[in-house]
Amino acid sequence: MPAALMNPNPTDCYSFIVGDLSRVWSSKYGTYVSVADPAYVTYSTRYMTPSFVTEISCSNWLDGWGIIGPVVLPKYIDREAYRRISTGFVFMGHPIQMRDELVNGIQKNDQINICAQAVLAHAAIAAGAQAGDFNWCADLNPFVWRAADNSFIPLDAFGMVVLSNEAARWKRVNTWAASALKDMSPIPRDFTDNKYWP
Image 1 (cartoon, rainbow, N blue to C red):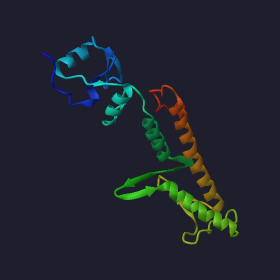
Image 2: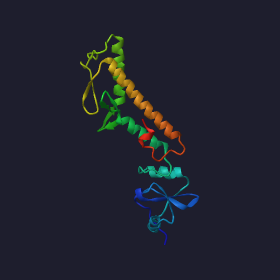
Image 3: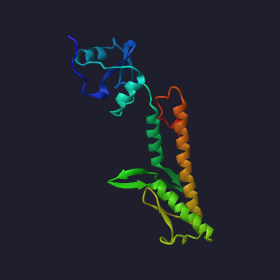
């Protein structure tokens, strides 16, 4: 008797791609397996196997559960780039975070904070702030930047501009790395490997 139930566990399911009945995509193993594979044979006696017109439609369906399907979708690359950008970089031996997210209902946007402070630093430099002068910011003297580990980095106006430039560079090189990955055909399944990223 044919199976009549859909598998309630998307992390361990199989899918046909129309036109190829010799193999099924396994969400558990992240690869195609033969329909003669013992695990699939057992599965098929219990559950229906959905069919998809394309690998992309199967991948989009699995993405609803955070599972990578037969095709690595460009949005996976965007998520990885965002994760890497948000993780931040090291500046003067300190970790700098680059979050852009909602945390407990509060918008945390480190990128905007860094850029905004750099605008004030540029204004201070234009007004005559000198290298080594840490008292350039009207409401925080001496000026310090709080790092991701809650340590404080004393910065003169020029140092704040350098921090801002490094933040922009960090975002730019990760964005370009993501773009290079999305230009690959096919996008490699190991796209999270550090070899693709700065």
